[in-house]
Length: 354
Image (cartoon, rainbow, N blue to C red; front, side, top):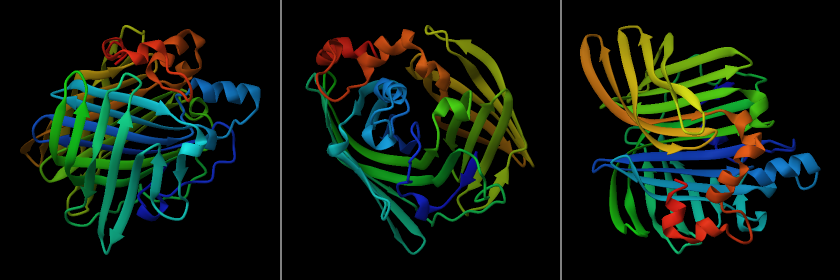
């Protein structure tokens, strides 16, 4: 995996190889218990349609499979969920400027001096009539620069992870029209990264753990991959002044088994110079046959000082995406172009797929 931190490379990447994918990831946690995750895709790696196109060899490049997923939670419980794949004519991603659009959902980036800001404009209506609308602003509070030898190295890896905003302020207003209507004045902290893969995800890694947890003045970020049986463990404590502490030790503990037979670690331990931490994935907030999302907490000590943080963790086992056994479940969650699945037309039934 190539690890970089370069705002100027947050633009669209050329993806000529079938099976390539790219996504722009944003998340935020509000001080009142709300949290949101928004992901823009060009080349949806979770798409059954994309996998079928790869087999058929027709229209099988990433540009034909744009998508967006939007998840909103309150106190760890889902309030709104949407995963929509659109026709390519309803999406665009720029290779010249930081801009992406899927349907009526847009992200834009702007840099002024050392300050970086992103605007998310959300306007998504589900087949059952539920809707989310609003705007969120992601801004750095004291510049975004940080440096470490483990970042921005040349690599021939097929997967690139671009960490743009380890920690930023997030503000704005969201409105959810659903069985549980909410008007949210968002004020919290957020994160943004950008991933690119030049081949199908299952060819690059077997398992993937990722997470970010915000302390008062720093952020713990980890990225753990199982590549053909070899574990690549990476973790950093990034301070608000831009300094980076590389964590030498990452341990996975307490394997948990889900209803779908997906097994992943529920606790992680980290160690670095003067730093020790235990991360507990307290709540499973999104569960599927090949993907999990958790909200959790970290207890840590840095040079003898106790610190606490909350945040978001994810786990993916990409080879399971290709199992046709799970495709009926995927069809219920992802809205593909054309006619909606009958489950998606019912607000109550669709919630069972969350």
